[in-house]
Length: 204
Length: 218
Image 1 (tube, one colour):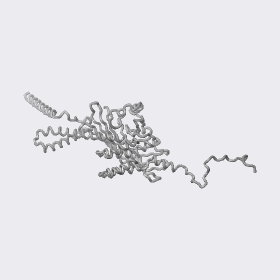
Image 2 (cartoon, helix red, strand yellow):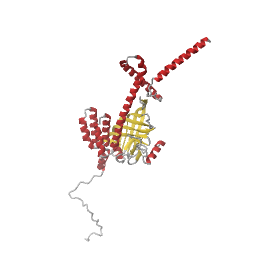
Image 3 (cartoon, each protein chain N blue to C red):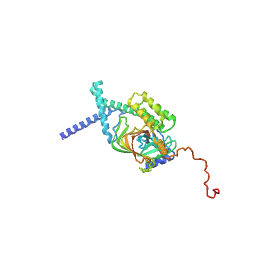
Image 4 (cartoon, rainbow over the protein chains, first blue to last red):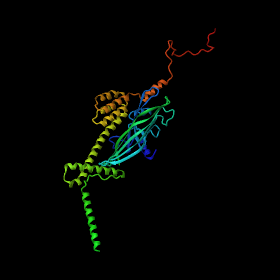
């Protein structure tokens, strides 16, 4: 865990001290924008032949998190956060859930009003292991998928108070991979999408 | 000596003329004009934008203003102002949509009836992006109570792509979840109960097994 993450984790442990400050929308914690992500996939259960849905809620329920908990992405890791209950868990660091961007191209420009726009595209890897370790036989449910993605980040010019509006969004709608359930003992095909969308006011 | 003086005067004249032209060009810019982008990467994009703006403005002026003199000076400025307005409007629209999307993201994480009601209400928002986000939120909320509303909304929708998205969402929500499949599997994996018999085994406490000492004398 790098220093920035330790500082944020400590700040959050002290009671999510500045979460929501200056944030009209999105998840801004300690002046960092966390991007809510959405996982929507389905796989065919080999034994029954039926399709099974996988959503954020499926994943969070599987890990035992209560309602109101969100999956968010920040600085290379996925977090489970529930600001009302003070939950802030780095799921990637604990080996549960990974969202990894491998960019192949990027560009940036300024709009006429000074808003900075950064675009990126490449391959997105998403993986979930409900016992916290990479594919091991006792995983109850796990999946790994990959697909192309496009990512856009914008930063407005500072307002009079020194805040700028940051937005991030990404989309990968062609995710495909394998799902694994231990009682089946073999892999099922999984497909779907992983997207993210967040915005907030950040102090420059 | 005489030649040198003449050359010096000529050079001074050229420099002076250039300075006057530059000053005139600078004073023609509006105070609100966006400065050149500070990052090297963006310079080419900004230059391309200005070129496009010039081209667009020239086209417009060719229709509205026949006199060539003011065209050269005012066109880029007018085009830039219009561009700024367009960019601001675009940013404002994106911000309004984003605010609703963020609320939808909060509601979809909940499990209460009011949150579902709020999500379903956004299925008929005037903005297509919000409606699309509401469909995604209904999927993530993951309640089968949403299915009739999604289907009813699909019936009223004329946009074929949106209709398909609504019906796909309803179909997806109807699928079993991991938790449900797990519960079903757990049931199947449990040892099977013996079938009920005509003469059922006594469920009450069995009498203690008889030991040889307890056996009645023959």
